[in-house]
Length: 317
Image (tube, rainbow, N blue to C red; front, side, top):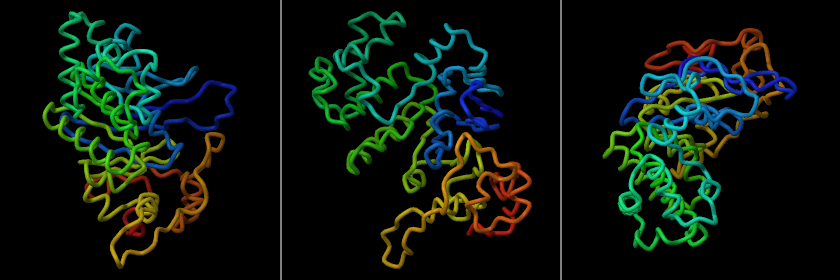
């Protein structure tokens, strides 16, 4: 994804793009985190990789998957992309399945559409359910979605996403609605499958501790823009953007001497607002006059990038 902007159509009241010059990349076998508050544009960034843009939206830039630009694909090419090369795991598994159809039909639909014989597709579905830890996979194929718990159904959705062995897996907060134990199991499954299959994983989350545990690199997003990106260790040890530092300060810690969480003051800017300078300036304790007048560019600082006029001053520590 290179310099991608997505703007809603006229008449929506939007004063700024949903995505504003976003650039990110995911290499084979790599887990990349995308973090930020609700409304920052994380889900739209994920969906844009599949060509799933809001109605009437206008997109620019390049989104390249296996050397081809998603934004210039025909409907037939997009359909092939979604069934063979890129798959997505959504936050709510029950919103991803048809409650009236059996799990076996859900898992084999894409395989059968690609020409796989029904018996072979069913055998493949059984293998996938085994891979994601479903006991009695043959019996599970005959059940309906309401007969599964949230954690088990999310495993089914992950199995469906892996059916065509995609090169890229988009996980949009796949553990948010699950209890802590089930979250750990789902993360272990995604990590193992990524290592075994060499699949690239873009992991969207609000949980910075989770991102620190599983991601190789992290992108921090605010108001439709990437404000910082670097390797996970460097990001958490030495953030260069005050917003990244604010997110880390919000995270509860269990160490006896850990300070209490400190919320970021104010609220995120809405789509109806387009401040002339840095979008985070009104919430930033380190903002100066330049911050409210000139939007910072994403520039190299250390081993990563940060969009802050004062990134080299160490103020975000």
